[in-house]
Image (cartoon, helix red, strand yellow):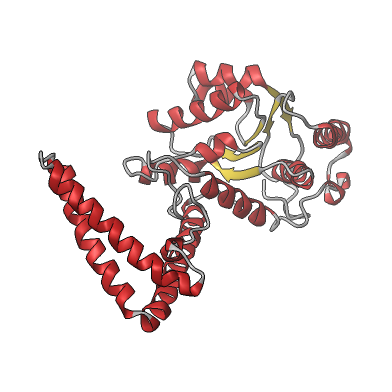
Amino acid sequence: MKYDLKVFEKVRNEIYNLKILKIEEAKKRQKLLYEKYPEIENYRNIKKSVSAEIAKIIINKQDVPEELKKLKEKVENLNKKIEKILKFENLNLSYFEINYNCKICDDTGFKRNGTMCDCFKELLKKENVKNLREFENFKFEDFDLKHYSFKNLSEMKIILNFCKDYAKKFNFSFESVVMTGKTGLGKTHLAIAIADVLIGKNFSVIYSSFPEIVANLEKSRFSKNFNYDNLIDCDFLILDDFGEESRSNFSNSIVYNIINNRILLKKPYIIITNLSVAEVEINYSEKIFSRILGSCKILCFVGKDMRVKKSYKT
């Protein structure tokens, strides 16, 4: 699963479509009522005009308390007239309200202060988990050690057993993991296998290509959609292709903020990279390298590219 712009847009469109659906439902309800009681529509139109006058006075801070009082009384009287008719149908004024799925953000995905709403975060997590299921064969039982030479077998057995034990006993006190080694050695396979077990235990998991994260955040960095809280808040994060992003001050700040915040929140993560530990030290700042090295178990994958024999991603 990729936490990229496509996933973000898909979830945002889903929320938007739910909002439109709720608005249309409310309009249909109102239309049926207006056909039976046209005077209600008339009262509500007058009420809108009066409410607009009240808003104008408040915005302009005009010193007209008596006029404001009269306008508010007019609104109250209109509401009473509407309520009187609604009683015949065993209804009240809430009948006209739009029944949004989320009362906090009114199905926009964002709170009034501009931060991402929890409903958006939950839908993103569900979409991430759904897409993670695409790696059907990336389970521990599908990881075949026979593809490794005798020379590398003992080391890979240790890594496999560590990953199995990590997934089985996982809790938030666990250290994070760096999987390093050349392509085609099964790094992504074992990371996804861990994720599969954790999902089965109801942990929220995000697997993402780090270059895609950086590229998508770069595009949206000056918009209201610039947000990577989901990568920090999820229970378990897997950052693949680490070191393949276009490195810059921006990308360095992203990786540092994600890693540092997850450390502070005691939320483990896995970094998958084709770089050696020495190359990570060379390519990243001392601040980033020390955070990674100080919080992670290093798993060095060895052997030759197995993708010819078996469909490993890395």
